[in-house]
Length: 328
Image 1 (cartoon, rainbow, N blue to C red):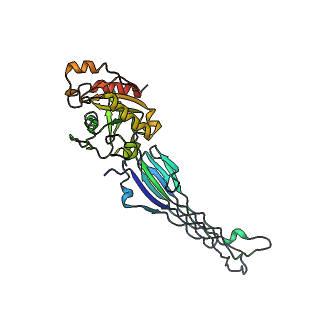
Image 2: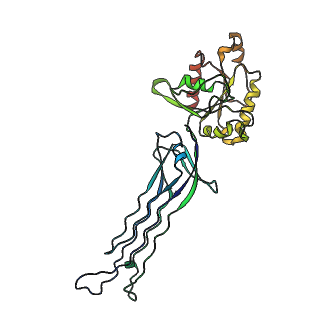
Image 3: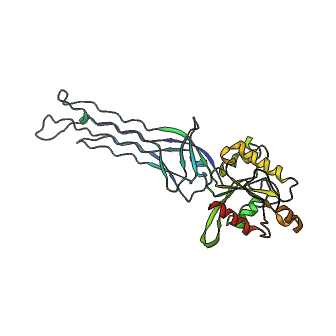
């Protein structure tokens, strides 16, 4: 199951209390203070795992607590530090404060670590408070509480190319044809209910990644359809590949609708390189294809690339074009 949103609560460990003890040795009737310091509480640490691709684990476990530090002992022995808790998340996870919505961390690289909540500092033992005027202090410092907060985890796929199009435009069929990903494919809208990520094995051991998100409909940026839930997954892509069904009656209108939805959701999306393609070329005649090859679409960064995922027509040319754009 693909889960890209979760809320969790984390609490770091409390620091151990400092000890109040005195030396009790033979022939030393009035030993000085010997209380040790308390150990620091354990931290809550985030770490990215390249083998994770969903936030599913957080659906079942929503609270994480690190161990407390142990209290100080006699003979100036310090308490043991509390064990840290390491929470593994997929690469591409955004961490926000649940109250302020402020981004705390952007976990965008492999094996990246970040301390989400720091453990409380251990208290000082009475051996730290001895002075010439108070040589036998009978007090110590209590341990500090660890940090506690609620956070939102949002997963954003990291891909080179993001596929954009209306439902049933052929995005899933394309990603199935050019990668090893096997998304559900059928001839009706919203077959794709979650993002798909595939790796294109290009020439001479080269490769790049492609992300397919559920089809966008007009009003997606306002939450209509499935668009708002998944538009975040193409925010990190380098290039946007617009897929328009070749049987559409108005290519310009389709492109404008898609582009406006992206622009309304995020200005960063609208500024990305935009490649236009006409899918399902097997449904058009040869004469029509020659005319369509000269078609111009306003505000696009490329002439329309025509292909068919079913017959393979134009697929190699499409991949060549994508690779050239990605390596510019």
